[in-house]
Length: 145
Image 1 (cartoon, helix red, strand yellow):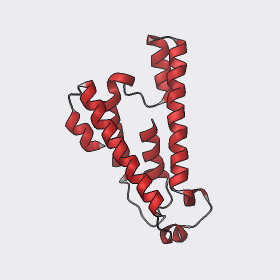
Image 2 (spheres, helix red, strand yellow; image 1 turned 30 degrees about the vertical axis):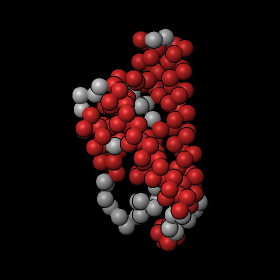
Image 3 (cartoon, helix red, strand yellow; image 1 turned 90 degrees about the horizontal axis):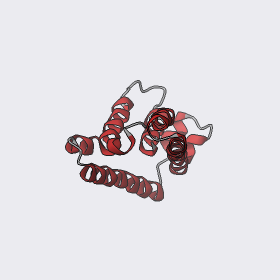
Image 4 (cartoon, helix red, strand yellow; image 1 turned 180 degrees about the vertical axis):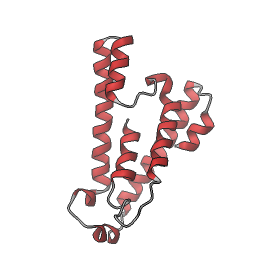
């Protein structure tokens, strides 16, 4: 859930990545690839349910109400953490800045290093989960991440 929310915020919601003059819709590919990577990597753990409401329904049905609330709470925590990381890496997105001001601001070294760490960590996590879970589509999942 963290990875999905972070990619949606970074690609589809970001003012810097979606200026009014740019009409591309490539963020759909990024979001789709996150779902493929997450689905194959964590599918055996969560059933590939990244939506807390869906996960809650499935967990209540199969594991009980208490486990369902715990799992949904973990997914909501992942979403909140993604929003916090997005806000810390892109503070300019939170203000009323126009598109011209966003294009002028270059990310600092701390932001670039944190972004690189986050991407490397997500790739390593995807590889590790695919190998541990014995995913039949490890190569596709790793390529998508």
